[in-house]
Length: 67
Image (cartoon, rainbow, N blue to C red):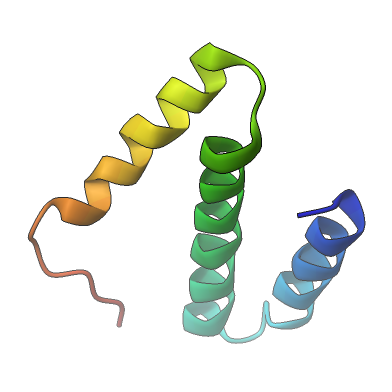
């Protein structure tokens, strides 16, 4: 993940702002991608530990839905 890729994804979210559900899904994807990137690539052990902890939420079973 590069800063350029992040800016491209933010632009995509901005362009989708007229469709709340699409923009929301794109935003969730960007956030998840960043957390995953931090978990795999951070050299800061605290950041890595926190990102791995955040990723544990994907193992929690509940319905994830949008309108």
